[in-house]
Every structure is written in structure tokens, then in C-alpha cells.
Amino acid sequence: MHKLAFTLSLAILGISACTNTDNPQLAMCQAVTQQLTGSTVASWDSDSKSDGSRTVDVKVDFTSANGQTGNMKCAFKKHGDGTVDTAPTTVVFNNQPVNRKILIEAGTLASKELLTGTYKNTVAKSAELAGDAAVKANELALQARDAAIKGAQTLQQLQELHSR
Image 1 (tube, rainbow, N blue to C red):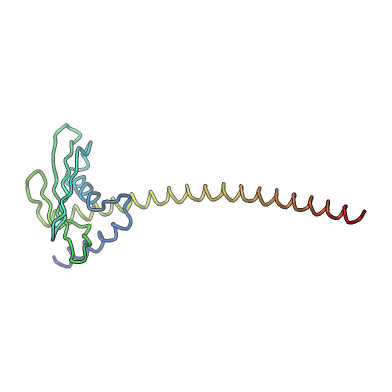
Image 2: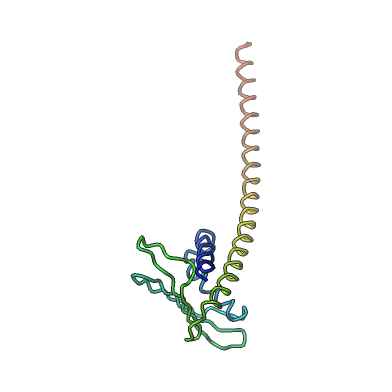
């Protein structure tokens, strides 16, 4: 059990560098919420974060597709050096503690979803940057051509002046 939890924690730790948010704990808490609700969250109504000495607690309030409201509180371990895990150590869903086994399952699926989203965003951003690079390369090629033409014209004028 500890080995599985440790493996999950290591897998999720990498997400902090890959997520498209400045708050990987919020992203993970929302992703776990989606897993526990069967992806029925229609809107995120509010979120808050409290930074304690040993944990960082993230709370999200949401409305599901059927109009019911709910909340989720995720606690993330804070290390002595100030770094914070991206895998929650405990989760309270609608004021009920979530069983560790269910949390590990939901966290694994949430990690997969976050990584899939990160991959898709990375592909899209890479394509956008490649397009921008192609446009810039064309602009530079035109500038180089214009500079070469101007240089050739200047050289021709200088040769004509010296040949007189």
C-alpha cells in the first residue's frame, strides 16, 4: 500500500512542472473532484487556499450538471524546504473523508487526465510556435533578399563611379 501511494506521489509530483496552471494543487484538487463526481462538474464556483506549516489546504466549491452544489477539500503535504506535494494526502468530499484506496484510484485517473491535457496543450503550443517561426523566417528571408539587392545596387553604383 505504501509503495502504491509513493508511486502515485512520484507520478503526480511531475505534474507541477507540466500543468498549465500556476497552482498545481488546485488543478489536482479539481481533477480529483471530476473523478469523484464522474466528470459532472458544470462550474467551479470558488476556490481557496490556506497555507499551514505542514500542509497546504485547497478547497473548491462547484455545481454539478444537475444543479447540485458540492465542495472538496484537498490537503497537500508541505515539506521543510517549502515545496508542496501535488498529490493530496487527504481529501474530504462534501464533508465526508474519502477512503485512501478511492483517493489513490481517483488521483491516478486525475493525473492521467492532467497529463493528457498537458500533452494536448503542448502539441497545440508547439504547432503555434512553429507557425510563428515560419512567419519570422519568411520575414527574415525577405529582409535578407532586400539587403542583398540593396548591397548589389550600391556595389554597382560604386563600380560605375570608379570606372569613370
